[in-house]
Length: 65
Image (tube, rainbow, N blue to C red; front, side, top):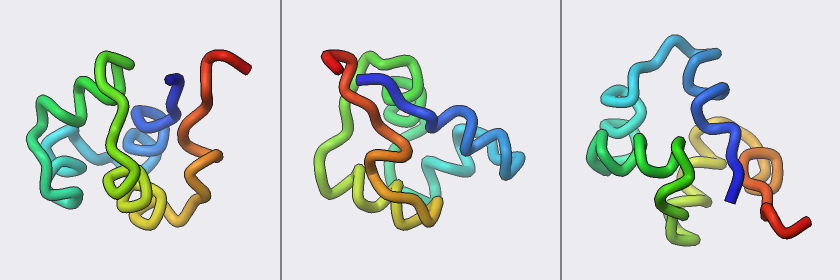
């Protein structure tokens, strides 16, 4: 799954650790999501969307489309 997480994080000048703390996950989890090695659970995807005030579809994109 493609995502814009790294771009959104950079726009706010947040480190991966900053984002991880806000989401209550590890920095490694943020890194894995950004690099496409891990797809977040639905609750985590909603949490990310709320944090960035975006729709889930504005952040995550199915690579099949």
